[in-house]
Image 1 (spheres, rainbow, N blue to C red):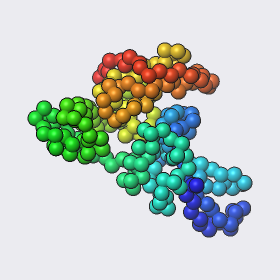
Image 2: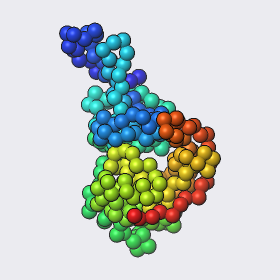
Image 3: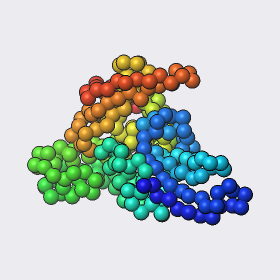
Image 4: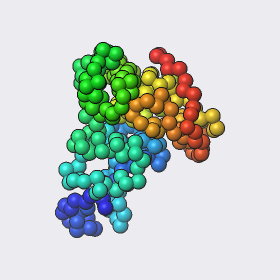
Length: 260
């Protein structure tokens, strides 16, 4: 059931009541633009739709990146967010973080917070310290000491990359992504996340089947995946013609990441 709020409509409207509902899901194409940051929403990127009645007998949906959508005050439960139940586990976790933080996307860390994580030395940390660090970064803190150390090492590596890229402007982040033939659309946080992922695990290659689309990946867990997961090709545009592709794989060789 989608959350709806009712307000009185103007006298000229054909409807007496304006109902607003919300939905979430991966973008079906890259043709829609975000009403928040005005950038294109990449195919497959999580987006939130605000649905309102149009001037006729139809609804109008305004789309925003998840990171650009403020938490609607009248959305009191994820059960009221249409499309949430159909998301995969990774996307559900992202939406839950957005919903629970009651703001725009997940809570952003300051440069000092990121830098402090980047300076940690897991080899000198006790198990309790590693668990505290992992929990603070929203990562599963269970496992043996060696497993905890591996998770913290990966967290530190990601924090170092984040500290490097969060100082950059949007044009600079896009330049890095372009140099690595990665997608350049989306809000700044999406660009930052893409750069961090590429820096740590390597660039996503073009599809070996169609040769046009840049592969997408869904990781099986937050850490320990080594940049491998469920890969798929979103297809690509050849001029105005969209070329579909059904390529899927669970292991793909990532490419060396370059700094322009």
